[in-house]
Image 1 (cartoon, rainbow, N blue to C red):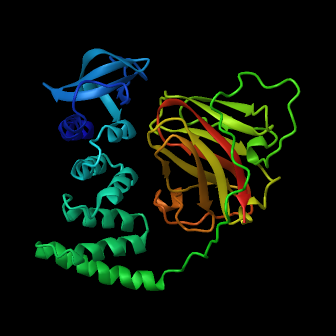
Image 2: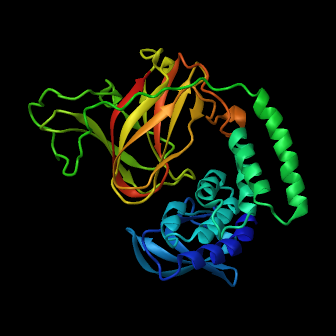
Image 3: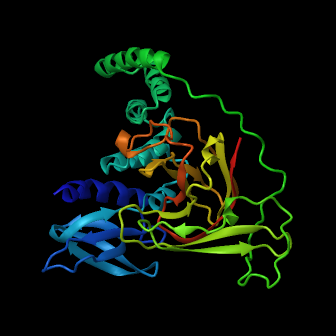
Length: 382
């Protein structure tokens, strides 16, 4: 069973890195098999500790609080979802080698985009093995990012590795990618403008009830006030969406109350806006921008997806991460070719097609955590 094969690596690599007792900051989930002898659809929020005697030992989380250890027979486990963001936050600050090992563990789980994110943060550090360049280059090339992959291979060769076979393969990859980069079509240049002068509203104490006679907005509004409104993405984690308004400026914004719970494998919360045919020309713009309020000093990974055309084809951007509490500006290039879709087998190497027939805009908060994220000034711009 694949889960069992990975568990031994997972337990010793991650439990060792995290150290200490169970902490509610990490929110893993174990999904049980279905069948007459099992409880159908049961998922257990927990922190995974170790595998021993063909059992998975976990610390059960009740409302986010640790309640004590429990063992689960491996044969009853259907799959495991690991809280990578929570575990990453527990890595020792500045320990690049630990983060490199964490990236290798993520890769063993098939979480390539997360592994690439961590490798890009530590590659080239003194204590990190040179092989990190090769692993990163492979991930970049698989994703269709040829120029970054070429840079990583060249960095490996420049570092003068002692392994002659790996050096030979890296030089061969450089020749192969150099030819492909020269002939690859270039994305059109984008000259993003400065963000609007009006600062976003900081909803430290958002009003519980909207004012009876809302003031006229003194700031520019975006799609957050679009008629028909935003809805939760049905295949993502639970959430409620609330329209809020600042009493002083009249600025309206969205509050996404994330439940931190879900039964799916995606471990993300999504909000979507069905725009239909009334906004057919929107994606002629060169970029999409928005303000995002991260309520915690932990990584908040965000991506944006579009459904276009009669077939409602799905295109999702790469993940952008905001690592600090406060307001951040997200600017997404709509003319690039780094989106993923079913036709690329979910590799980030296609442009958005049928751009003049936008059906749905989706904002994805790619973490499973109980908190409220605020969205404001969502606009297509040139």
